[in-house]
Image (tube, rainbow, N blue to C red; front, top):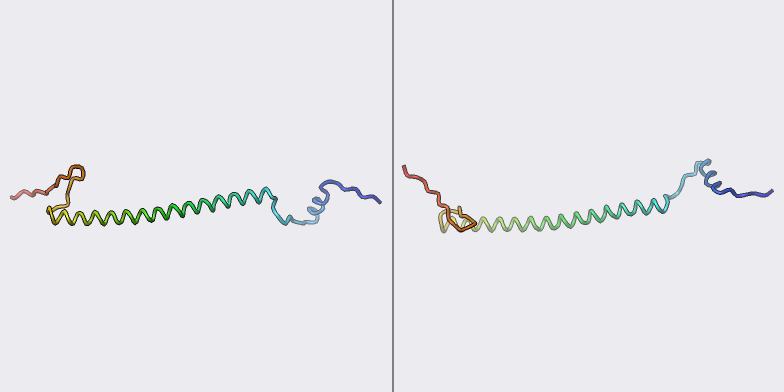
Length: 98
């Protein structure tokens, strides 16, 4: 008795027997790997940006402390820290004597 092979028969037999695939296709695997890799790269970039942001925030804090020191110096020397930063003019608060 001769047997002939029909294309796709073993796949159909597996379907009828309820056999489930063991792996996704190569194309599906590559697609999901590409998306996961892109997510990982993006998360690394966010981490780098956050590190830069943190360093800049520390720098701003140091600059704010420097301004506070300058204010103290101006108040001791001129009696006020109200200075026009464009031309250096000291703005004294003149209170009228009644």
